[in-house]
Length: 204
Ligand SMILES: CSCCC(=O)C(=O)COP(=O)(O)O
Ligand SMILES: [Zn+2]
Image (cartoon, rainbow, N blue to C red; front, side, top):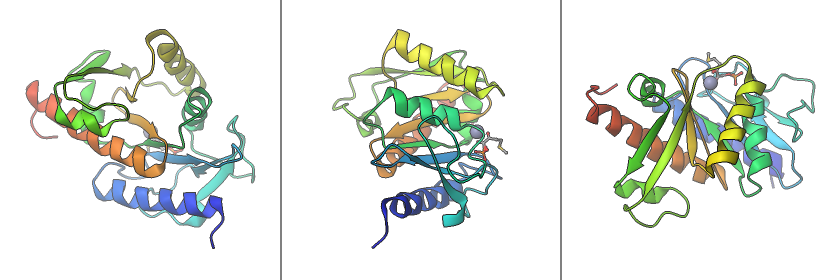
């Protein structure tokens, strides 16, 4: 019987294999995390290849993002912890570097509106295509704590979001479980791709 850390870690390993297999985490890009019942967070060690993760590539941090084993967690850890802080129901955060999310900011300035897509029903609480959701696009920033603050302030001002894009970088989305978050990755990447094509881009 695996303990909770191992169960979440294996889910992240499997998600990483799938995400990399789709071409959504090239080289060592992307990072993934899952929250445990006691508030600690299992997260990918910084710089690891996300398609070839093993148990040793997943580590534990506290809710503030501090390493609990001396290793270096993802460079983008604070983007994960601020989402867990804001959303108590969130159990997993996934950050892929998909082609469409990376290209999106070349087509849209500071937000993407998604509406009238049946696939929006893959997102939590949505049961009709007759809905309009906004995916904010933030300028990329190497200062992750400043970026995390900017995302948090946006949510405070505009209300809940399903994910966000970092310009020329990738996107973040989350869910109650790793499985839910992965469904949101797939749905959003599909819709980003459609919007790019709709606005004159070829298949990225
Ligand atoms: C080579 S990708 C640059 C860093 C990045 O954007 C990323 O998602 C991976 O960083 P991590 O520290 O989580 O491995
Ligand atoms: Zn990244």
